[in-house]
Length: 131
Ligand SMILES: [Zn+2]
Ligand SMILES: [Zn+2]
Image (cartoon, rainbow, N blue to C red):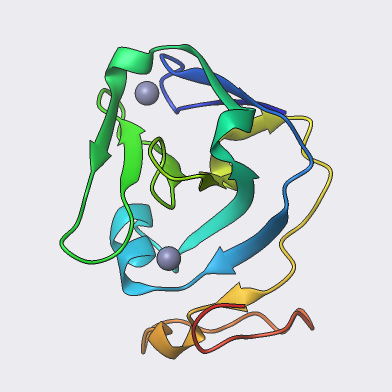
């Protein structure tokens, strides 16, 4: 799979398919996405290769939870789950441009659904916390 940030400065590849894929509705994902949350694929960190713009990737480590990484120039979210230190990382599906052949399999952190948010009636399993 090929991916990039919004401005195109960061380009990367992921050896697919993803181990799992899900929508995350947690409060962190709302803050970083500007919406209801993020859509993610889980991969082994070693299967993610940054091809261009590595120096533009900023990683924010919150006091609680895993590190999130984004493009410093355009702000696009790229990776979570502790990339690049963790053994497994999450890749934002919004960053994938080509080669993605799977859809998210569930909704996680639905305990954090916002008052202004409506979960889609898509038949996917919903998990209070993790799937
Ligand atoms: Zn960018
Ligand atoms: Zn989340």
